[in-house]
Length: 85
Image 1 (cartoon, helix red, strand yellow):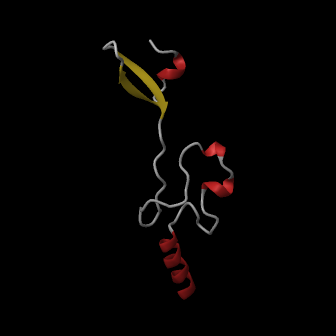
Image 2 (cartoon, rainbow, N blue to C red):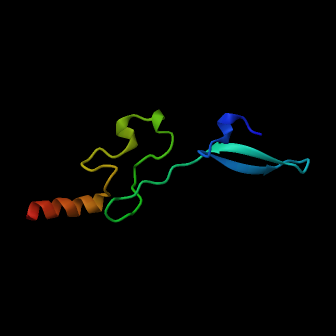
Image 3 (cartoon, rainbow, N blue to C red):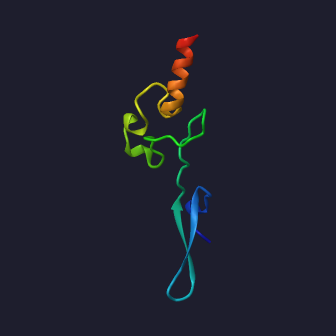
């Protein structure tokens, strides 16, 4: 049985075939999903997803209004709509 820290489902299991023919299980941290725009659901560019503790706040997402939440094209549409009202 694996040690308690490895029983968590937050780690993904990778089955590795050893030269002896046995199968070993390697445990690896799961990767996060890519951030998507809230309006059009396209992947956001310039938004980091994994190991965020290594980066500062300005490196994790774009420094503009709604950065990390809306893509630039949807933001442009939103600003135009707000100005036209």
